[in-house]
Every structure is written in C-alpha cells, then in structure tokens.
Picture 1 (tube, rainbow, N blue to C red):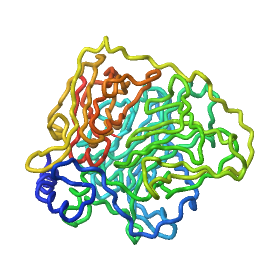
Picture 2 (cartoon, protein in one colour; picture 1 turned 60 degrees about the vertical axis):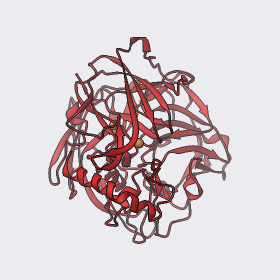
Picture 3 (cartoon, rainbow, N blue to C red; picture 1 turned 30 degrees about the vertical axis):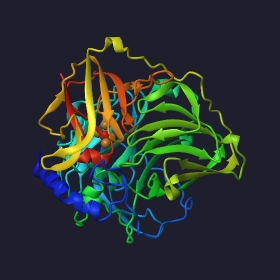
Picture 4 (cartoon, rainbow, N blue to C red; picture 1 turned 90 degrees about the vertical axis):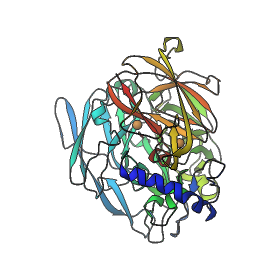
Length: 490
Ligand code: C2O
Ligand code: CU
Ligand code: CU
C-alpha cells in the first residue's frame, strides 16, 4: 500500500461524518452503504439533440510488418469543445476523448507504444483483452510522465468490442473521467463472413456521463480541495450530462436501413437501461466477449459500467422524418436521455441478421476444479472506510487466488450494494443469479453486474498466460477505494 492510499483512507475516516452532515443527499455513511451521487453541472448545457454525433477517428499504425501492427499513442492534455462555445481541458489518448479507435484482427499482434505526455503517471489496460501480464496494465505498472511503454497484444481471441483505458492504482476514476478511454475493435473472419451491417453502418457508441463547471472544465470530486469531497462521492460519481462519443446528447442522421451499434458503458458509476422511444426492437447480437450464438430481439439493453452490447437497429421500420430517441430508463430527467436518431433518407441495404451467429461452448460446472467465494462490501480499513473484497482492501503485494493454467473454476460473487465485477484475462459465463440459471444459450462476458444483495456464480477457464491479473469492481470510485483483488494464474 502506497502513502497516497494510506492518506486517502485516513481522510475517509476523518472526513466521512462531516460530509454527511454537510448534506450529502442519498449518501449516508452511518448505518447504510454509500450510493453513487450526482455531481451537478454549473455550466450552461445545450438542448438535447443539437450536437451531431462525432465518430472517434481511426488510429493509423505507425508501421506494420509481417508479424504486427505498431501504433504510437500519446496520452496528453488537450482543450476540446464538448459543450458548444466552451473549452474543456481533457486528458486524452492522442489528445482526444474518446481516444482514436484501434482496429485490430484476431490472431494478429498489435503493439501500442504509449508515451506519457501528462504530468501524472498513467497505466493503460485493454479491457476484454487476453493479454500477457506484462502488457495487461497491472495498476502499479506505471508509465511515468515523459516515459513510454510498449503494450504488446497477441489478440488470440475472437472478434469483440474491446476498449482501452487508464488503470492507475487509486486514480483510475479521475483519469478516465478526464478522458483516457477509447475503442479497440477486434475483427475476425467468422464475423466478417456474416452479412451484418458494416462500414458506415457499424458504429461504436461510447456512452458516459460527465459534469461541467461554468468555465467548461470537468472537475472531479477527488481533485478538488474541498474537504470531504472525495468521501462524499465514494459510492460513485454520476455526471448530469450524458455524452455519446464525447458529445452531449447528440443526434445521428440515419438512413432507412440496418445499423450495427457497438454500445459501451464507459461511465464511472452509472448503469444504463437503454430503450428506443417511441418504441422499437433492439436486436442484440453480441456482448463483452463477441457474438452470441443467435440474435436476441429485446426492448431494453442494460449496461453496467464496463459492459458492452453489440446491437442492430433496423430503421427501415420507420419513415423519413421520424426521430427516434435512445433513452435511459434507469435515469431521470436529462439523464434519461442519451441520443437521437433522425431518419432522413432511403438507402440500399444488403445486410441481414442471420439466425445463427456463432457457436459458444458451454462451460460445464461438473468440470470445475475449485469454487471460490468473493464478497463485495464496504467496510472499515486502516482507520478509514473503503470498498473491500472478502474484507480486504487491494494490496498489490498479495494474491487472493492462484488458479492453475487450464483449470475451470466457479467464482461465487456476492454484493451489498450494486457492483459491476470485471475480470482481466478470463472471459466467463454466468451460471446463476441468486440461484437461478439465466435463460438462453451461454455467452462470453468479462464484466457482470451484481445488483444489490445478489449472488452471481460465474464459470471460467484460465487459459492463455500465467501471471498476475486483477479482478475488480468497475464502478471506478469503488475500484480506486480498493475494491480490487489480484489473482495469479500459476
Ligand atoms: Cu475496464 Cu480492469 O478494467
Ligand atoms: Cu479489463
Ligand atoms: Cu463496486
């Protein structure tokens, strides 16, 4: 445990009561567990659907050879326009938020040389990547200001929507909030053989919430010098502006055709329940770990922080002139709005949604060598309050599980309040939620939302690499306040 963390914990212990009596609404540290809390903007906010949806630029490799594509990426500060007419200082990969989209292929190495042009250390992690430990972005593998590090991704994995983001111990929440996140798309031949919408109709959408001060800046509670700010938000920081690809409540003009949207919840702490208004079907074709076995038509897609959903929306069901909103049924007022699609033209559409998308092996619980229990709770630690797994705060010096390479294990995860739990390296399948087996065929995931007071059993096989990885809560404030555990594949 480093001094920064110790100071934080002490602060949490001393500052907690003050923060509550100072009027932290919906967040009592006495007698109940803190919930995520809304940080209000003081900047003038635009009317919804007045800004066009941006699409993050595609990263260009600086060189490629027979074995790999090489990218140079600089994490740096930049001033960008997020709210019309105001400048916002961000920390971004390539100076943009979201960072450039990296387009990669299954089985082809991608090497990202990250240069740290920030004034603070950073760590980069490829979320959903099956990555050797030295390139996985262990939270203490710091890239110090002015230095660089090569992240080497073999990408021995199926096509999926991945994302890369900051992972610095104790600071991930603030550094992702400032903008350090981008898409990383893995494609493969199996998926390309399907007639799914592609090209301009294959659109990644990073959904995240932020708040803005009058001058356009995006303050983060931990970084303010107001005493008690960080502990008041220990349940999670919620923004009041919903951004899609970095733009507030944007609009996208669409043709009467099928579109594939790769939805990512890149928020620190906000879950979304996405639905179309006035109504319509969303066809889910993929999740965190790539294609499902078959398409699933639904009215609603729930995404906890870190989760992804690949969906198809068929706008030929609408007329030219129709405006369809993507709503967030889990939010209120402005946070119930996400973006809008404006149908403005006819178009030829050769795409289709095949009845069969892929095959997913069902992991058999009978083959599990070990069952482990992990309890996600808040609690006191070292004289402060934080978020714990099995009663312990994260300590990079300690491994809490040592699964053997090749072994199948069942992990039983239990929550107090909601915790989106994410495993590095090992994609898993959900076996049961509160004892009930989920309906339908299995799907590969890397993040699962534990709702309040739930037990979720997951099953995974530890293949790929030996070494040190983490499991953690993807509510980034929980993660930064120690809700993380190391497992070592041996
Ligand atoms: Cu998306 Cu360990 O993180
Ligand atoms: Cu990850
Ligand atoms: Cu949590």
